[in-house]
Length: 268
Image (tube, rainbow, N blue to C red; front, side, top):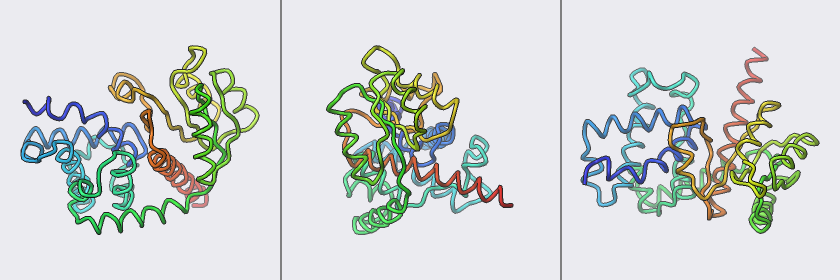
């Protein structure tokens, strides 16, 4: 089997992981492109690994960490927007958290990806929990046409300390709810009950205000093709509660970080 055939099934999910780490489609995809360049030069990292997915993510992690060390000589740096270079690299606790909670790696495989032992992975996970617990609560708009799924998401969101301002089943309902109260986070399905699009509803809302958005879909790979403006945060259906928690924390982390940066610039 060729290298491209071996890694192709895993690339959409590596892109999802990279985007969750960077908080951006452009930056996450640039890191993945840099990984592919490395593998073209030396495919042994994937070919010699029992699990090619572990080898792919391990190569990504090695590249990511080498950028933090080398500073001025970042591999593929010309492809990365300046705001997402070395100063924005995600700490290892959140890498471990996302590898397990979002990507579904076992502790053993996550340790292999990060080149550490299992006890270290557990310590990193605990550190991530403390870090992510510091995020502020926010108001959440849920756009979901399946009542049971909507109720499940609402319960999960509230268990994390957030409030739900409304549940919309259609494009029109989403616009109506957001006009009454601006959400601090949007969780949206893509295909809605009346045939309308959650993606279109979100795009319309974001013309009026800026807020992090997480899309929930049964077909995440369809939105990671590079052929259209794509969501930075995607959760596949059926989802795990830990996955939703992880992605919400990541989305709010980057939103809060951007707000703090804006405040510092305003003061300066």
